[in-house]
Length: 359
Image 1 (spheres, rainbow, N blue to C red):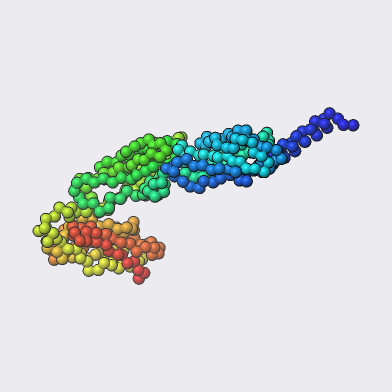
Image 2 (cartoon, rainbow, N blue to C red):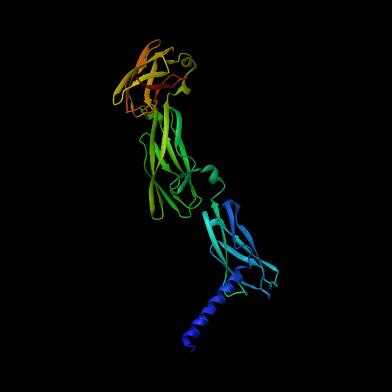
């Protein structure tokens, strides 16, 4: 005996099968239901794609309406009935103005062939502008920056000089910036624009007044910047570096003729490696010029090298010394260098190679 429950179950099963076939038939209308635009910049403006469809049913097909998600429109599509076997289209236009990075959008197409919508999709990746990939090549948290380090390079000890680091916000969310601290040898450090919307540029502007600094040679440090995007706050370090040298450009012709000349017996200093020991050695410097040689500073690129003492003034035709100590590890892992900064215009950064060898 057929019960009411059985009849209801059979009806629901047939409804599901019928619905599935209708959806299957609807999806078969479009030869391709997705399109990838690739990577493009905002400067290229709106992007469009035309989806082609074929009426595979046995009666005229009508596109009733097209519904799209935020950022794209599909107002252009075949309005008249499409005869069996004939083609129609839906044109989708995407506006990248309010987006960045990867995007994916859905478009629902309602036709007379089914009660269910046909789903189309578009996707791609947006650059804020064509300059981002060429100019802002590095990441600093959620920012893109033009370089990793702010470098002053060789800077004479005279009037102040400034450098900057350009930044851009390519994220959809606004970003707030704040300088937390910076090296004390910088005269100032500021952000030119603290709140950045998507596509906005800013700069870290740093200034040094070399004549006011007691130091010479290479100075390094880091600027700590706070980056806030929504509820996320992080601190990032921006390295900054400068080489402070004599104001050679201010020398008179007479002074240039009587310049000091730094010379060493050798550009290589041999030091024995003894595991766990501190090895001392002396480097001899000769002034072959016609005026006093001022040794401004002696530095090394290794934390295991210590400059204990050096002669700061060496008269013409005289010799001076630099006392160097090297803390040996269990094995030889490096061949350090020593840099002698002086007032010799031609060789103001004299490089000496330490040659560490087992003895």
